[in-house]
Length: 330
Length: 291
Image (cartoon, rainbow over the protein chains, first blue to last red):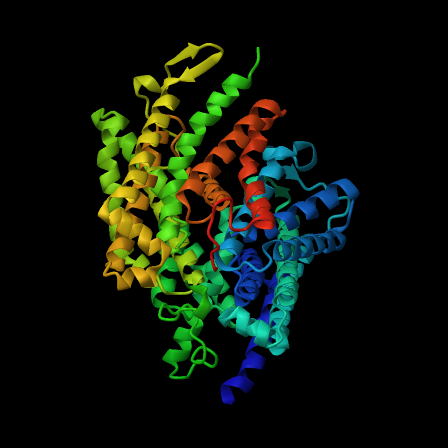
C-alpha cells in the first residue's frame, strides 16, 4: 500500500508545478508546460473514448471545431476568453454525442472511419466558407478584450489538472466497469443490464468537450487559425500516440505518455531538425513498436521493472496480440 | 454549350480510376477483415516509383506498371509476414493503430527522401487530347481508364476462375470452412494482402500522369477509397465498382454544376460515409459484418 499512499502527494506536487510554471517559469518552460498540458488533455480525452472501445482517428475534428468556435465567437460576437471556451466545450460535446448517435451500435472500424471522415469533412467546410472562417487563408484573432498571456497559459494548466481529476472520477464511477464490460463483449454487457448507447454518448460528449476546449485555448494562445492548422493530422496522431505510449486504458498512462511524446517530439526536432517530417516518422515507428512489443506502454513497463504486478494490466490484457475479443472476429 | 456530355464522360473516366483505387482495399478487407490504413501510402509509393523510372531512365509509366505491380506485391508480402500477421487475431484497435502507424512511417520516409515538392510524370499522352463531338478527351485520362479496366478485369477473372482465386473467395466467405477444405489460410492471407498492395501501387502508377505527386497524396485517396468501399459494402467487389461510380458521378456533377463545386466535391466522400452509416451501414451490396 505504500506506493498508493505515496501516489496522491506525488500527483499533487505535479499539479502544483504545472499551475505555478505559467507564472514563475522561464519562457522555455512556460512553452513546454503549455504544450504538455495541452497534450495531456487530448490524450486523456482519447483514452476515455478508447476505454469504451471507441478508437478515434479524428481527434483533430474536436480540436479544430473548438478552435473555430473560440475564434469566431470572439471575432464575430465579441465573446470574452472564458465565454468563448464555454462555447468550444458545448460544440465539442454536441459533436461527440452526435458521432456517438450516428455510429449507433457500430464500433471498431466503422467508428474509426467516421471520426476520420468527420475531421476531413469539417476541414473541407472550413475551407469552403471563407466569409465565415477566412477560408484557406485563415483568420486572426481580433478579440475585444485580451486576457493576457499569463491567464491563457494558466487556463491550459487548469484544464489539464481538471481533466486528470475528471478521468480519476470516471475511473471511480460505475462507468469504469461498464466500459470494461463493453470493451470485452458488448452483447454480453447488454445482457447484464448495461445500456451501451447511454454510456457511449455520455463518454463521447465528455471527451469531445475536453478536446474542443483544448482547441479553444490554443487559438487564444496562437492568435491565428486556418483549416490546415485546426484539422491537422498531427493533433490526431499525437493524441493517440500519447496514451498508447504511456499505457492505454490506465489513469496515469495518458499523462506519462503526453510527457514522453512532447519529449520525443522535441528530441527528434533537436537531433534531426534538418529533416522535414522526422518527428512524425518517429511517431509512426513508435506506434508500430508499441502495438507489437509494448502493449501496456511505459506504465506497464515501469511496473514490470519495479517487479510489481500491474494492477489492472494483469487482469486484462491491453493491446496484447494474443487476445481476440470474443465475438469481434467472425 | 451543353456541359452534360463532358461531365458524363469525365465521370466515367474517373469512376474507372476510383474502382482500381478502392478494389485493393475491398479485397484486403474481404479476406483479412482488416482495413489497411497504409493503403494510401502504397498508392503514393507507386506514383513515386513511376516518377523516378520515368525521370531517371525515361521508362514510360505504362511499361513500368507491370514491374511496379510485382514490386508492390513483394512489399505487401513482406509487410504481411513481417508485421500484419502478428495482429490478425488481435482486437481491431491493434490492427487499426498498426496499419495507421505503418502508413505514417512510410509517408514520412517519403518526405525525408524526396521532399514535399510536387512532381508528375509527363509522357506525351498526358497532355494531348482529342475532341469527339462535344466532348474533350484528355488522352492521359483515357489511358488511365483503360489500364484500370484491364487490371480490375484481371482481378475479377483471377478470383472467378483460378484455383487460388476461388480459394481466396472461400476464405473471405468462411474462414473455418476453408480451413476444413484443406486451404492454407495463411498463404491466402499473404497472397491477398500482396495483391491488395499491388493494386494500390498500380493505382499510383496510373495517377502519376494525371495528378501531382506528393508524399501527402495517399491520405485523401485512402479516405475516398474507404468511402467507396463502405458505400458499396465492405467485402463486395461488385459493390465496390458500384460505389466507385456513385462517388465519381457525384463528385464530377457537383464540380460541374455547383458554384465553387470543385472545392465542395472534395467533401462528398465524407458526407457519403456519414450518410451511408446512418441509412444502410452494410452498404449497397455488402454482407453484414460484425465489427
